[in-house]
Amino acid sequence: MTTVGVDWALDWVRCSAAVVTEHREELIDLDRAIGDGDHGENMHRGYRILLEKLDGFEAATVGDVLKLVATTLMSKVGGAAGPLYGTAFLRGAKAADSADLDAAGVAAVLAAGVEGVVARGKAEVGDKTMVDAWHPAAAAAQEVADSGGSAGEALRAAADAARAGAESTEPLVARKGRASYLGERAIGHRDPGAQSSALLLEAAAAAAGA
Amino acid sequence: MKKLINDPNDVVPESVEGFVLAHSDIIVGSDDPETLFVSRAGGAVSGKVGLVSGGGSGHEPLHGGFVGVGMLDAAVPGPVFTSPTPDPILAATKAADGGAGVLHIVKNYTGDVLNFETAAELADAEDIPVKAIVVNDDVAVEDSLYTAGRRGVGGTVLLEKIAGAAAERGDDLDAVLAVATKVNDNVRSMGVALTACTVPHAGKPSFDLPEGEIEIGIGIHGEPGRRRIKAAPADEITDLLLDPILEDLGLAGGDDVLLFVNGMGGTPSSELYIVYRHARARLEALGTNVTRSLVGNYITSLEMQGASITVLRLDDETTELWDAPVHTPALRWGL
Image (cartoon, rainbow over all chains, first blue to last red; front, side, top):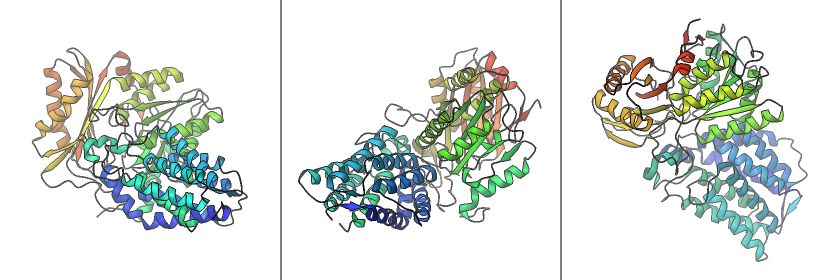
């Protein structure tokens, strides 16, 4: 797709809900290993409620949908993930104030989201957090935009980069969040927040058929 | 998993429902299940600084058990081991506001800090002045530069009591924050797990701890600790917990201290007193005076077996505030 629009954003929510449900146990297990085991349940609860709110929801812009995602995750997910995803989607919503997004628009939304996560959580790349998935995803989308690619190609590149970014957290020692208390014992485990971020970005690409 | 529960999704609301019914002389529950919190039965006290705490459930009696005269004004229970969201924290803040501002008492966990910060911003937008004390007393976290910082554990209970007494005697918001800061600066804790615990909706233990091994330096959310060692006699484990506390607190001979031995939920009080007895002997051998004590299950980790030791250096003011009357479901004296 050259551009993605409101229908894509709504499909992104539905695909995300499906993928979070499908991977609930996996996220719980990742979080049990280096956190406290609530991430899968919290994300599942947030998206379940979000899916209910989608019934009869009217959106004029992509930003309208992202704002609904933001406020719902912020008020329903809890833990660290709620405010972090909430802020990411809220910033993304502000950058998506139109009915359609081209590749540059997709890149701008992702860049705004990353800035939000960094501002709230104060983590950097390499801290073994969701930033490790979001940051390369935004950069990959920007590259596609710069080379004249489509919105769908930007989303596909972002999803691939996010998956690689999530995998890259495995050998790291965590410097933020609960896993940071484990020191070197966190090595060898994938960060659950980076993994859920990769899943959501894969859902974004899937919703665009990319 | 064997637990006295119905649906795992209903654990928190059903538990809070029973808790409110059992202690209806002291506390009330919020009407809206979407913004679940408990607060003092008489409502906000006009002219008094309101104290609000909260965090994931599973640590009972913390925090709801400490709502009442002389301690908290409201407490917000999140899902098990998960911070509550900003909405109920804001609702509790409003319910606790008697016109003199509100102090948020937040245990230092990333989720709790982020959600309370967001709620404080929302309260500020409604012209309720909010300040926050972030409790971080856990010495098990050795390198706080490269982590999310020391966690809030047992010291939280003592801080809620002492800051609560300061608010009750009429201190303004800055003064209550100053007392809370003094407590946080002078309190250190460390814990041990003999078993893991099982979060109801996860259905399996939060970490695997083989028979014959114990986990030193645990937090209160079922997260693994700093290191794992072979099980040892109580006195040896007590030393392992107490040594880092003493080193970090820099206690001097002649200091007055409060010694708090806390159970994690699944350890009998007889064992807690075995720990207390040795910790007390160690403190007295240093020349410190154990002038106040607390022993029991006050900040727990579901059904986990284990304990934490907390040492608070006291001065005349904090001693007087500790002794002040308190009437809550879990802590009561002088009233």
